Length: 107
Length: 119
Image (cartoon, rainbow over all chains, first blue to last red; front, side):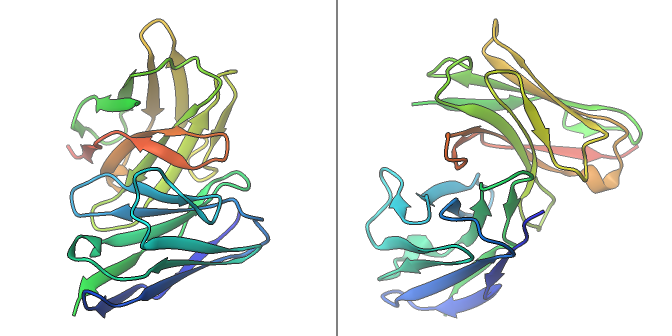
């Protein structure tokens, strides 16, 4: 099974900051990587698929990059509505797997 | 645009079978553009993939649950279902049904339903 590891697990930032979250796969997953945003009490929302393709309707301040084993999610200018938990997920092989999540909090 | 809605009991007794249904609207569950799946999230914890079912009927399950889980599709009702047998308190979670694109990302989610395992 492919293990997905996110870093950091949590951190604090301010509105307007540029933030980067990292996701590492335990083996090569090409670009079969998606990012989700989850707010308390809500279902996760797809932000990025195929490592770098922005899902329709997602603001352009979100971007993704990477291939192989190392991936990043960048938020270029944090807005108040971006404070949430973020998950990466690989779809290269079964069983599918998620990272443990990164909780982004207001500083 | 697809909409998914989970339904089923919110309380299940230990050793019994958890049964949930996901009703799909806004598209056909028989479409080759999607396949379908279940994700769960224990309170305060991360996301866990349970399994997926393709339009062909092929299924894939999380090995940690494989012996207890069954996912099936009812095309006449545009629904798919999850059964998880021999539940324990560790199965207490919010259960989400999802649609999955050919690339494997989960583009539509139900709102989630909390299932508590307790006597």
